[in-house]
Image 1 (cartoon, helix red, strand yellow):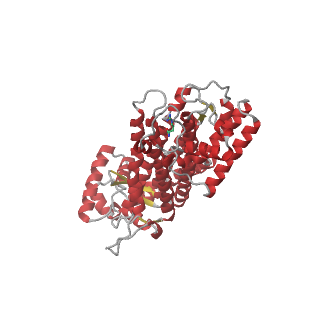
Image 2: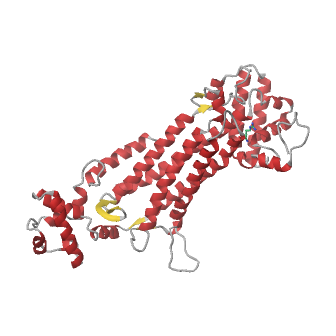
Image 3: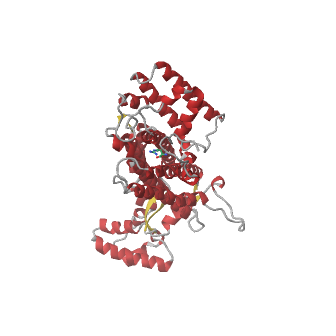
Length: 462
Ligand code: ARG
């Protein structure tokens, strides 16, 4: 048991209490941020004359040594310390002696942990943004390649109208674009430095909080010391954004799983991204997509868990807040893994264009266009809807698609049909006549792809 306190205690902490309270098993994840934060704090203390320049330099060298030794494996973070803050401080004192005891001047673990967690998650927000961007780059490439790849668009998972693969993937492009915008908003809002808030009420030392914030690349210091040590909003926002990313990945995964079935055969997942069965030799399973879909639950769980942890907490710091870490770390690691694997799977997936086109042709996805044909020849839409309903029924009886009927068969249902109906209901016409903004028609799709290409250039990773 190595703890930073104990002066006012007359008894040793019970071992079970110590274990229950300790956080080093998980907060060692931000040892780098803890040391970096201490270095900035020490620089500021010296600038303000609270430490001498000599003390500053010996403390900085000590901290640098700890960082290097942890990184090289020479110094192992062990669970004999209560938390990462105690580990670093105790090691510093071992190394440099008395000046090390001045490190914690004008600081509490409350503002220290608030800073460490912010520094850690700020880096992770950037890493996740970079991974979403990589996914967008793959989507962009596929969208450019598939503006002519016709497939059925679905509503209620029933074939509805023909679209293109480019258009379908474009829907996900928009979702992941918004996900990046959310990450960027969160970055902006969280980017204020809590260090200097002390335990809750600031300190009596003349700290220069703006200086420390600048050293750590924050936009500035936070403005209320009680809020500084007890704000976990930014983690809730982040977990919410991560949940939305997972929701998008999970929907996409669900589609990949459906498209990969023997019934659809729209896609073939690369061998490197599939797994087999121990008993059924023919199987090639979409496990990556299933795992991404499955892991969505634990990220939602982290969000609900932290919201619940925070809901009854009086100001300012309460130990409940220590629960923010494992959840957030797990959610971050889960989302990063899912993004990287999903992108790899998508990048190597084969799209079976012939199956997609055949599926679009076989499901009367051009029925709306056949009705529009009648409308363009003077039939009121509601009447046209009824005529095409009868036409589809006839096609089902005959086992034919609309365009496979003879003109005579067509005219038996409505005399308005002429030879040009065939052209009007071809899949290519159905898609390419849809030229409203955001529709799948090739010209419009190319315009949108161009706009998105521009967006990617204007939005490098955070
Ligand atoms: N391990 C603690 C946490 O994660 C650090 C802050 C401890 N502060 C305290 N007053 N006990 O929240």
